[in-house]
Length: 163
Image (cartoon, rainbow, N blue to C red; front, side):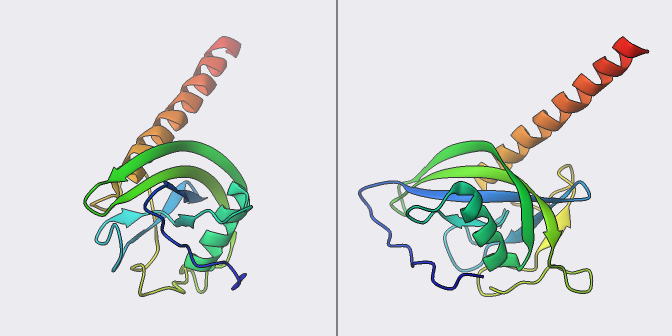
């Protein structure tokens, strides 16, 4: 883990760019409840702010390691959302990515190196997620589910064509 990542300075005159990472293992995805910060009390995937000159893939890998201790591979772009929170004076562009779990579980559990920021990390089926889910994460889940259905439908059509 790179401990030299800079602290994010929130500027009120421009949007912040963040990533959310759908970490996949055995067709389940990693979620935890946010604690004590923006989005507290809502379930989210691992993620954070993109640093200056950090690629989206590197950001995804770094944030997942920092928040969970897990390593990931096969990072792919999924979708993005713009969220404006006028009460908090926050404006975010959040890019959601999907990646495959590689390693890092300890005795079958996901580590939680930042327990002050998240509840315990757990694997969930996309059709049986805990509530409440962060608003843009919920919308990204819908997109992820629709992509999976399209892939299954394409495979089914291909099977029919060749049978």
